[in-house]
Image (cartoon, rainbow, N blue to C red):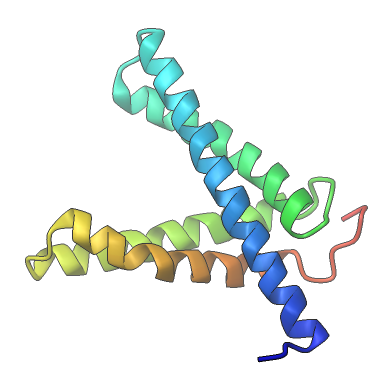
Length: 132
């Protein structure tokens, strides 16, 4: 199957999105683990790691996935990030209320959440240039 230029570009961007997502996940977990190792309790460590993670994720996603620099898109990015979280949390709760094992439920939701994240962030960064 031959992809036209536009579709190929979207698929390449989605591939970069998945790779950057792996990097971002590793970074966020490393920050969380470091804070626990330094003696913070889990909830404060999670809040700090999440806050640092949002900024790190913004920088890596903007630059390496969408080719954007600067912070003008940060408010929209945070809103999209929170929207994805709320959608994920709501769907997870529905599945849990129906007796689905939490490991299985989140495993089912993860690909859906990844696609939703990509679509929303594509809207955030559309028509981004180097100075956006």
